[in-house]
Image 1 (cartoon, rainbow, N blue to C red):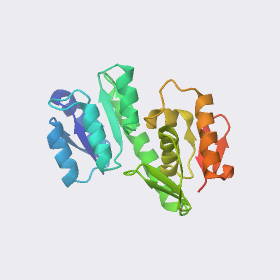
Image 2 (image 1 turned 45 degrees about the vertical axis):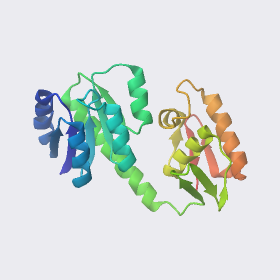
Image 3 (image 1 turned 120 degrees about the vertical axis):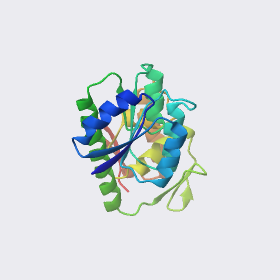
Length: 221
């Protein structure tokens, strides 16, 4: 059974979704107060968070950011807010999916299973990956390669840092746009290719970042 924390102040909707998800062996805890929800996350283990954006006392985007700063739990945004800025910002802050309300509960169940599947696959790849020559220090915002600190711009740091976290998996250009805050959402594929080319030059070994035609890139080690 998978444990889900639903942060939702529409308790009627939360009850409907909870009853539906319990049919599929999901155990759902509902919190309508974001501050209580963050406290609960510190004390109890959950497999996934379903997060509304319009909450009392704290915006859902702030909640998303606070969760992601503490742990790498999958997050699905469930929101009636239709502004594309909210969607882009949520994905930049680390949300795994964004489901606009209203929606059929069956779609939520499908999205949950999809996100959990991706999370399991990502964890498995990371556990099997060989030790990397790259060291990422997110507090200092630095990346070293074989002990040498790389002189990177903010965007280059974000791109390479994201690839390090996703080592040995293919990263699409869209992934980079959504997950690297220093990249403008209107950036073209060409501009991202140029930045990756500069990163290769600064590393000194162009073979370490493999180009996957029509998709994106893969950091080999």
